[in-house]
Each structure stands twice: as structure tokens, then as C-alpha cells.
Image (cartoon, rainbow, N blue to C red; front, side, top):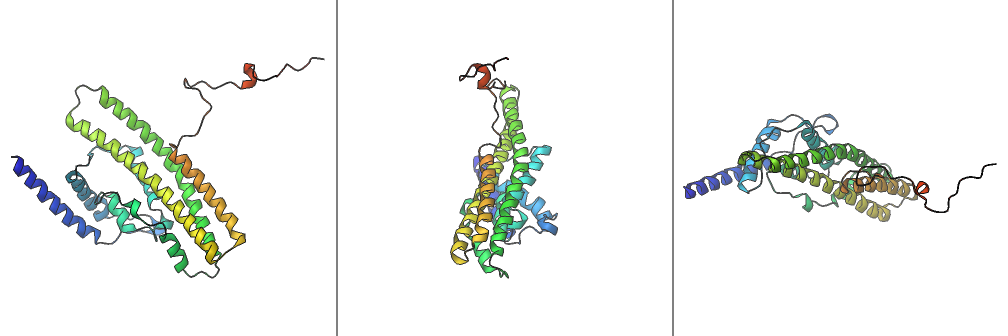
Length: 274
């Protein structure tokens, strides 16, 4: 029986790898106006289902649970950060689509941030300063995408903590329910981590491009604008990497801390009454 199961697993793996190779040889996901993804049976159904099979063969957790509204929204907003419309021409569309559908293990760490500068230097602009303007526009677009992503990511993380707490409290939980819940939490976690890596990757790409442009086509007028945009993006990235949660002046019990002026700190005295 065990030998039969191993044979079936090997057969499934061979079929999945063969199908994945055929899918990877196809074009990247078709896009419509403004870089929006168009509906596609291959990219919406065939590739994700094949990716699930391959992930199971690799021993990865795969959840068949229905998604919450926030989990669907998280995938949309994360994808906007991983492969935004303005970056689709230099980020490897085929490879990130293969990673999204789990046809391959995470490969985004192997992408080169130098590709952005290669794109900028190869395009013919009427003014050399237009390349700086492109970096400013792209960095500002990325910074604007991070707060909406953070908003839904925190909600999903909170719900996942509740989900794991429920799993820990249920005595009559089936093995299938346990595996599905744990796998969904892992999927959400991996997606959020990927989106954060994508933010840092593009910041590095913009910084490399600026450093090279300052040598190739120096511009005192534009350097300040670019650095301002990069600082804005870096602040947004730092906010996301710290958990997307703003610092609040609360104590552990949730009470607002009183100002030190009202707790006898310093030498403050009541104003004299005349």
C-alpha cells in the first residue's frame, strides 16, 4: 500500500512538473487598461490548481478553505505591491506569476534590482532629467500603495491570531480542519512577507538607479526631488516592516498615559494668583 502511494505521488509530481513547464513557457498574465489583470482561465484556475498540486507534492501546506473578504482584499493589495503596473516592464512578470500560483518555490530574492536602471538607461527621453522624474513618480506611487496594504494586513493578522486561538481551544477538531486552518495562516503570512520584500526590492532598485544616474547624467535640480521621494518611500516601508501599527501613547492596560506635568515631574508650580 505504501509503495502504491509513493508511486502515485511520483506520478502526480511528474505530471505537475510537466504541466508547470508548459505553463511557464506561456506568456505572462494578460493585462488591460492601466495594467489591470484581465480574467484568464489559465491564470485564474489552471495555474493555481496546478500550483496547489505541486505544493502538496513538495510537502507544503495547502488550504482549501473559503477566503474571507479581507483575505481576498489582501491578495489584491499585496499583488499591487509585488507587481504594480508602473513596474511591470522591468520586474520579471513570468517568474512572479509562477511564484504567485505556487508553480515554483519563492524566487523573488533572486531577481536583480539593477534591471530598473537598465530600463531607464535604454529608454530614449528628450531630456535626461526625465529619468529622475520617472523615479520620483514610481517611488511616490509605491509609497501610496503601502498604507492600504497595511490596513488590511493588520486585520488579517488579527483574524489569524483568533483562528489559531480557536484551533487551540477546540477539542473535537478534525485533522482536516486543523491542517486547513494552519495552512491558511501560513499562506497569509507568506504573502505579507513577500509584499514587504517587494517594497524593499524596489527601494533598492530606485537607489541603485539614482546612484548611477548621478554619475551618468548629473542634475542638481532633480536630486533633491528624488531623495525626498525615496525618504518618503523608506518611511512607509519602515512602517510596514514594523508591523503596520502606529505607535500610541498607551500603557499595557490600554489606559492613556498622563502628561508628566500632571504627575509632579519637574519644578512646575501653580501660577501666582493676584
